Length: 489
Ligand code: B12
Ligand code: SF4
Image (tube, rainbow, N blue to C red; front, top):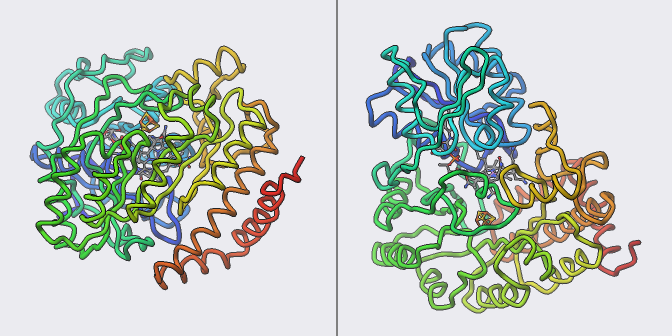
C-alpha cells in the first residue's frame, strides 16, 4: 500500500476476500502484474490490498483514495463475498468523487458482466486478461478520446449495456516478468508453511489446457496456457530472496507443469544456483512422471497439490477430469516413493452424485497417502458445461442480484437452504465436509510435528484454541468417526 509521492493516475484495489490471523498469505497477482505493466508504460500506479486492511469498515481505504487522488480506480473482484466489499468501496468513492472512473476487473466481472454494469457506481468492466485493455482505456480516458472500441471493455451507453469483443491477443508473460511487489507491504504475505518458514506465492503461468466441466476456465474466452520461461522464474525467486529473505515458494497457478521442459530447466537453475528455497506447486494426475518428480525433488520441491476431485470413476468421467481412480492412486504412490509430500483436493455435491459415489470418495481419502486434504462443495459457474447441465436438468438459476451472488458463491461452506445439485441431502454433504475437515486437522497437526516446525505448531494450536474453531473441530471429529465406521444414516 505504498505510493511514492502519494498521488497516482490509477489506484488498483484488491477487494477483501480473505486473511487468517492478519495474514492474507496469497499475493494479489491480478493487481500486481497490472501495476507493473502500467508502470512500465509511465502511468503512476498505487495498489491497495483490502486483505491487509484489518478494519471492518472501509475508512482506511477511502482515506488512502483521498490521499492518492487518482482519476481512475480499478477494483479486482473474485466471485463470492468479495463482491460486497468491492461494491461498498465503489459506492463510497462515487459518493465523494463522482468524476472518478470506477473499473471492475477479474473473474467476477468476466463471468457476470451484465450484473456488474447494472450497478450505477461502476463505470466500466474489463473482461479477461487486463493489461492491454486497461492501458488502452486509460490512454483514451486521460486524453479525452473515444474509448468505445477498446477490446474486452464493458460499459453503458445511453443506459444500454455494451460488451466489446474479447481480443485474441494475449500478453507474452516474459515481456513483463516482475510483478510490482514493491507497491505493497510484503511482510503481510510471508507465511509459515510446513515446508518453509518464510513462504510467498508466485504465479508464473496463465490459463489451463484441461477442460474440466466444472471449472471457470471454460467460461473464459480465448484463455490459452502460457508461461514465464525458466530463467524468468528463477529471476523472480532471486529477487524475492534478495529483497525479502524468503526460503519458500508456493507456485499458485492452475497448471504449473504443462511444459515439462520448462520445469526441468527451472530445476536446473535451482540446482546449479544452489538456491536454498523450498517450493510446492499444483499438478495434474496425468502429468505424474517419476523421472521429472525426482529432478524436482533434487531442486528442493517439497510438496505437490493434486486436483483429485472424486473417488468415483463415473463422476470423474462426468466432469471430464481425464483421470481415473487407479491413476490417482498411482500418482500419490509415486510422490511418496520420490519423497514428496502431497495434497488431495476434492469436491463433493456434483450434479447427480449419489451416496454410494460419495462413499467411494471417502474410501479413496482413507487409502491415499496424502498429507493434506481439502474438500469444497460444488457450485455451478457460468460458462461451464456443468453449469449448463444444472440449468437444464437441476432447475438451477443463478441468483439475480450482486449481493445474492456474493452469498451464493461464498467460501466453501453451504447452508441447508441453497441449491444442492447432488442426489443426497444437503445435511449429508455438510456432514461429509466436516468429516474431511477433521481428517485434515489431524493430518496438519501430525505434519507440524513431523517437520519439527514449532512456529507452525504454535500457530496451529492458537488457531485450534479459538473457541469457534475448537468446537467445530470436535464436532467434526465425532462426525468423522461416524462416517469412518459407516454408522451414519
Ligand atoms: C490466489 C487465489 C486466491 C486467493 C486470493 C486472491 C486475491 N485476489 O487476493 C484466495 C486464497 C483468498 C482465494 C480464495 C478463493 N478462491 Co481463488 N484463486 C486464486 C488463484 C489460484 C490465483 C489468482 C491469481 O493470482 N491469478 C493470476 C492473475 C494474474 O490473474 P487474475 O487474478 O485473473 O488477474 C488478471 C485478470 O483477471 C484481470 N484483472 C484482475 N483484477 C483486475 C482488476 C482490474 C481493474 C482490471 C481492469 C483487470 C483485472 O487482469 C489480470 C492480469 O491479466 C486463482 C486461479 C487463477 N487461475 O487465477 C484461484 C481462483 C480465482 N479461486 C477460485 C475459488 C473457487 C476460490 C474460492 C471460492 C475457494 C473456495 N472454494 O473457498 C475462494 C473465494 C474467495 C472469495 N470469493 O471471497 C476459482 C474461481 C473463483 C471465481 N470464479 O471467482 C479460481 C479461478 C481457481 C479455480 N481454478 O477454480 N483464491
Ligand atoms: S485442471 Fe484445474 S484449472 Fe485446469 S480446467 Fe481443470 S480444474 Fe480448471
